[in-house]
Length: 107
Ligand SMILES: [Cu+2]
Image 1: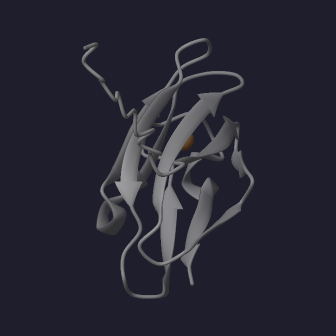
Image 2: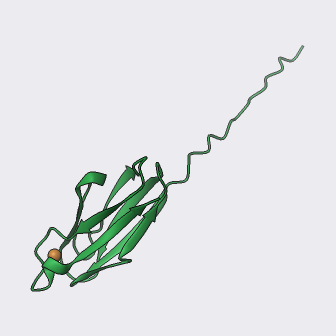
Image 3: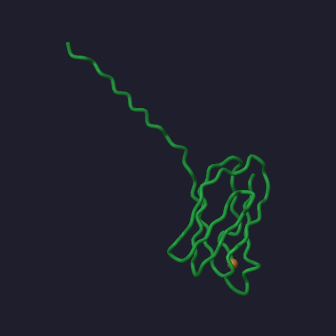
């Protein structure tokens, strides 16, 4: 008698983690608003198009530093609470640095 072996392969579907790419360039971020769903798992990637820039959003745990050809990224879970979270460049990049801002909208 031939042993009957059933091999069950369950494809574990890992939840798709959306990658949000943010380009930094003197003195702005593109896009300037990123919308997240509450509780969404997302990877935030900072790409610099000219020189070193930072992206800092303390309440979301985002603290990135990117240079040309050296992007930086972090995976986060968006908060359960809707709100608007301002983001700044925290790496001095020139005269317009203080106005280099964007925001995360959680809805
Ligand atoms: Cu800056």
